[in-house]
Length: 174
Image (cartoon, rainbow, N blue to C red; front, side, top):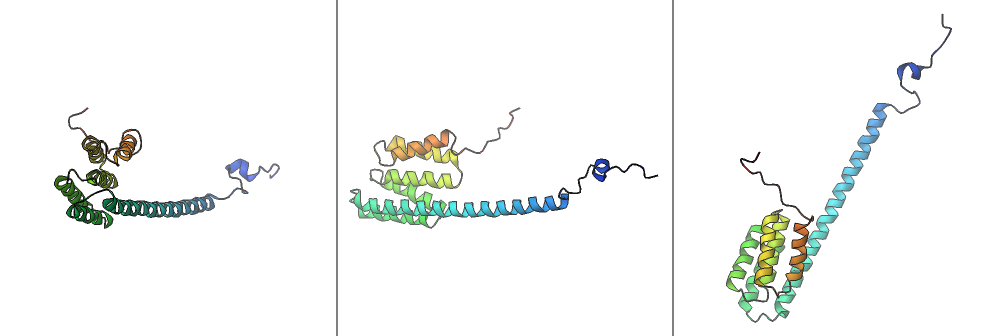
């Protein structure tokens, strides 16, 4: 009656020595959770580095406002107030303050810095089209400004694969 025994795994296709699906699922879940933690840690480190970079840029702009030959103390005060808005991450107020600075002091050695900060804020907000426009404006209005080379590099990155604009849905397009 039991003349020929067929091994269990040949009949069922399940190897009893292999880990169970449940233990494999738990292993994958643990790996996924570890990857999520690592990802969050990397995001946190990146955000810290971005803030350090921004603070360094603010400090350099504040220093350059006194060293760049700006003779107008009022212009310096307006620019520093705008930088304070950037530092405090009050993006809308910072944009308005920087625009006001450029409008009031278009011949200031810091006018290109103000446009550069506006572009940086737009990049921070993922408004790539607006950032490009501000960088192009900076290059056009202040071709000899000390932020031009950096603006050109960022503009090239925005155009060539660095940061992309969100896709616009065109009505009526098929």
